[in-house]
Length: 283
Image (cartoon, rainbow, N blue to C red; front, side, top):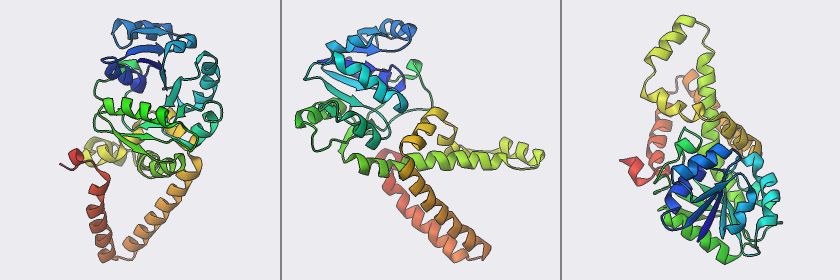
């Protein structure tokens, strides 16, 4: 099968590395040097800045930033045959599906939930998607054959495939992906508000695993965080309000020295946390 990948960054490059074992990979990047690098490193078989290269592809993975998806699709569609399957890897699905599905029936919304703190082609890894969730969000008009083709490609990456509506996806990722980014970023920003330079320097010096773990996603790619907020605004605001309500309850309990309620909360969350983790993460 001929696989097209538009956007040779972390996700696009990692897809190419794993799919190239069984398929011919055509890659597109805006930067000619990235195309040259992708060929030299044998990440893709063919690469060009010209979207016309995607005319050779049976399935095209759109791996651009969320803000560039709609304009890229407009430029892509004239190069497709009627049977070309298009899918994306964006972390928000409702707005993407609404923008693309009316113009291309063989579009399957997708979200491989894998990544690292790095970006660009140099960050591409083999095995990035192994045992990671890969969510597909077909709608009623999406052809079953297109959905199954993308699902089979995802399963060939050893990813765990899930199907849901775009709306359910966006509400779920607001809780477990987009909210944590904003909470983590707010944690870092709050620490920086310490008025004593001496105390701030001490905190920075002695910060250990607890701060490292809770601040990790807040120290990630600012563009990705901004896109999460912009394109999943309603669901993110909803989850932030719920989180603020929970924080207000904790503040009240601590102010009132209600230690039993504090312990009850921590016992509840200790029990609940494994339900959000994979088997390997529980070990």
